[in-house]
Length: 365
Image 1 (cartoon, rainbow, N blue to C red):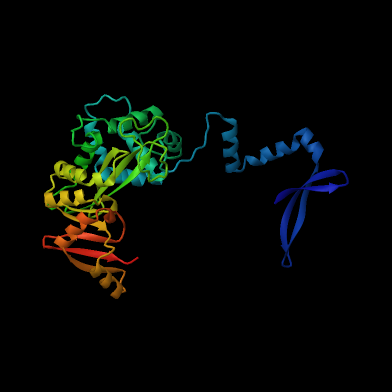
Image 2: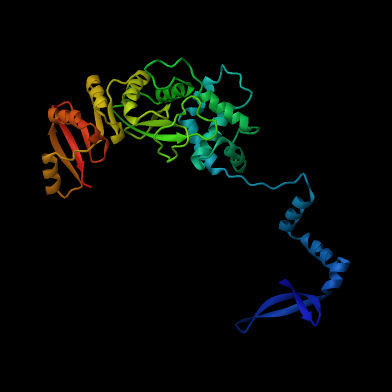
């Protein structure tokens, strides 16, 4: 049933109409005519009729209560993301590590909850802390009541707080973030933990306004914003895909200058004995290869052998896009010294082994 206006000349009449199916077709049947539209509106009779009928409908009563009672409010919040990420946060031990580090600090707000909320926000929308303040209102995140923008700023400042003076040969000082990473690694480490293979890649993060006072420098921008100051962020993961740590350097640091620094820090921070480094072509230089050889480390670095006759003959004869190729180590080392610039371009992957040979997996373009 429904209301309709029945026109009769210049006047309109309010009718209650019901749809009925007769002989296979739907027909409308007038149940009652309530009166002229203008008269019902002027007298308030129609409003009284609707209010009287609303007493028998719970949905209408709920809506009316929310309009008339200021103390009554309806709200809906999302719970899936915080529940799932909260379980991972606890199982990985992040909550316990942060709580333990914060025991001696006299913060007057829930720093761990601020970091949890900011991390969840970056996973979902990857915005700023200012955006996080408005975003978190749509989610039911336990313990984040009362958090404001300055709390997120203070929490992030604590994570980046320097613990000691930067050594002369280091690209960045040691901070609270490093201690968090080390404790998390120790928490999941056992007798069989082995970082025999680690993967590393870098990217650049730009700063707006007055950001980046410590690490902000102009350099090669992967965000295509050379006008902005930036920092270089490096991510290191193990062979199973677990993140080990992140490294931060000034924005004018070249990728080729970071690899050896990261390896030395990894071995020092996590007590690693055997390491096989996997990095892309941007990490290659003659000095980097020499440093890896000097440290006796295994490595897999992207390289390109453009003019080698052996490589060309094998690639042209084989239709497989990835072709194993053996090249003598001494000849490979001499090619590095002759043409170090060509090694910074894509092509194939070089692997150091304990044998006096070097395996190249040549990728056909």
